[in-house]
Length: 186
Image (cartoon, helix red, strand yellow):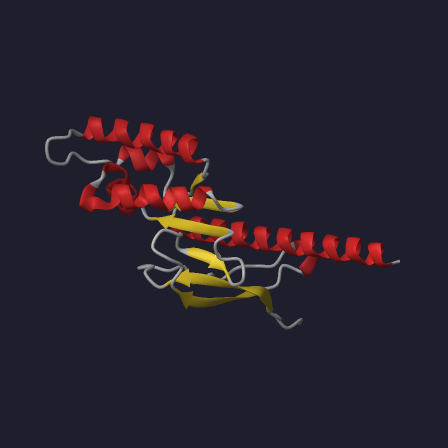
């Protein structure tokens, strides 16, 4: 019987120190061409800045960041409860200036809207309308994709794969530059 050999990611995921329910990235698997082995994902706690998302990659922070939102956090932020809306808009500006960024939400778009509640003078229907329209508007205004996932685990996997793909893209670009420079020397 073959022994289950894990492989370690060649990059470290940075987790913002303010993240309240951080992903662990446990249970990830390598791609089929790497034998679908267990991945040990290196993580490090680091302050990513007031408006820079919750996850990034060591050495690439500020180039690729992901903001995670639970359903409750997304609703309260979008609807402006607890003064979060303006701060989040500043975060969207920062994310929009990066090569790669995303807002990953731990619920479907339908669940985000369907589970909205009335609050203060605003009815459930008014909050649902605001949630729907505001997400669409912010995606257009800031060109930052929102990835709605069917639960926390899928959001964790999506966050990992976004960061992993960007890391691979950067490494491929670096290899191309090295080859081009070597070609110029000969």
